[in-house]
Amino acid sequence: MSNSGEGVRLPKRPVQILSVKDNTTHIVRFLGDYKGHMMHHVPRLGSWPCLGASCPISTHRHRSVWKGFGPAEEFFTELNAWYLCVIEVTEALDESLRGFPMRGQTWLLTHPRPTDKQTPVMGMFLQHDDPAALRPAFDVGPVLERVYRGVKMDLGCANPVPPRIVDEGESDSGPAQLQAERREPPKPATEEQWAQLRKMIGKDPRVGNDGQHTGQRQINGKAAHHG
Image: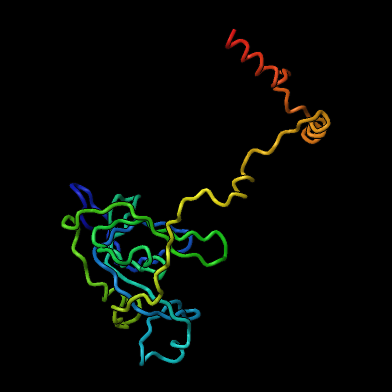
């Protein structure tokens, strides 16, 4: 057990890798920067570290993907407490985080997947806490070695996926023809056209809910106003 606040004792939890699974949401506060390593997707085994030149052929022949790992804390709402974790940063999430000092940054991480189609992990910045008030960063190596059965990962590989090109857009009214199409369409002018419209919608559109002709109400209203 450990203390968190006066008179409060919290259960102990092992420090583990936090991988944002499908349809889950997590609040994470970074205690330091994350560093990356190339991984392989191995059937029935999941992600496994690439060992470079010494990587077994049975592992190295599988599709590779970059992942980052860094010291962090996850907030548990049911306990109102932060617990240490090693945050796993995907290639897509790295596009939102890269280039900033991470210590003190709190993010909402989610992985919506309503269908079987693969979707990226998404992140939303929440706040930046005072780095001096946080617990110190810790070495993520021992946690990774335990999970990956003693494999020592040489963290420091940059995400090989080029950054996404983002356009902020430019305001404009658009082509003249498009502007003309946006104008209010002409209203029926003849009784025959009104009859066709009534047949389509089931009533005379010029008659309000009170049965009074809308055109007459406008005229009467105008006359009363100037009366």
